[in-house]
Length: 431
Image (cartoon, rainbow, N blue to C red; front, side, top):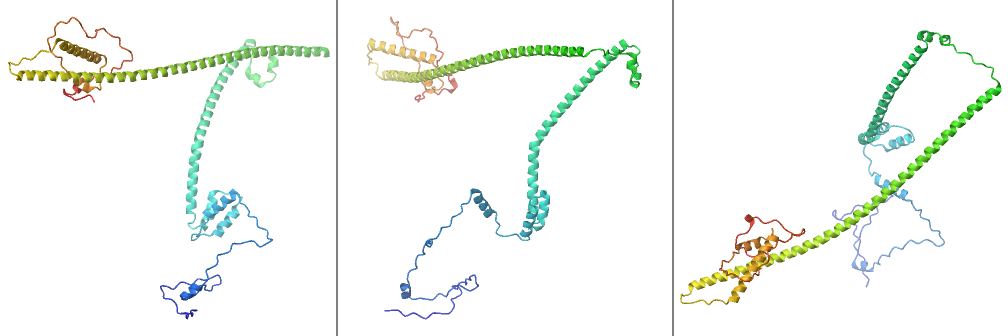
């Protein structure tokens, strides 16, 4: 059963729901009036078709996409970044572009360019002048930093050269003055009445005072040729002597060069040997250091064992002392008629031997290895008191022989703990 379409409501929608009309390129409104459709019309409406992909018509030639270079891509990106969306108020882009085209290829200063463009900018060139001043100040600082040192160096060199020139001029002046005075003395030696003022006025005064005989011009052409040959011969002999001298000098320098090379080679060999010796010595020291570390570890372990042994002996002695004290107290409490049975002689002798050996061991270890950190051990040993008993004269001695022993150079002996830092008697345990 088909549903009948309802009538279209042509009244405008309420203000809250009314939409603004959209205008196309021709100025006409493109907004369509939405009508209420029934449920049947919605069901009967066909679903929208999917948009078809663009396909080239048959027998068509595909266009080649022009590939851009990296520089062109960067230029496009730069244009996108620098493009301004809104032109500031009071800025004339046409005039600015015209000025840029006019000044292209011409040599003008930055101040002139800013002065030409300033009237056509939004802020009358204030920002351009600020940037220009900042750039010029930066350039001045850079130029001063770069060229100030160079200028100072050049001025120092020129000053030193000027000082050297002045000193050389003074030296030459002194030499020429001395030479001049010697020449004047020689002139007066030969001509005592020589007049220098007349010599400057009269060019022929020197020929009058010292007449020079005229050379004889009667020599023939053969004699002139012989003279020239003689001059050439002497010149050749001098050149030969000079060549031999230069060869000898060259041989001497070559010999000196070989000696220097040999000396350098020997020095390099010595340096290599020294380096090898140093490396070998370093390896030996490393090995010795390793051995010493191992020895130190062993000594530390032995020290710990000795301390523990001393603590054990001290604890045993404390126990024995407490037992003796407790026995005496029990004896005093017992009636006088009770007689305590004496222990056998072998038990008493064994106990005395054990106590004496323990005391000897503790005293010997304490004398050999004084401890700085074993506070509890020193306290426990300090709390031990020697038992005062009537010891009979024994026929044997089980104590360690008191022979001075040599101290090893690797013996570990930390500083002793002062009595003020020792704990009070009764301190329980070393750990």
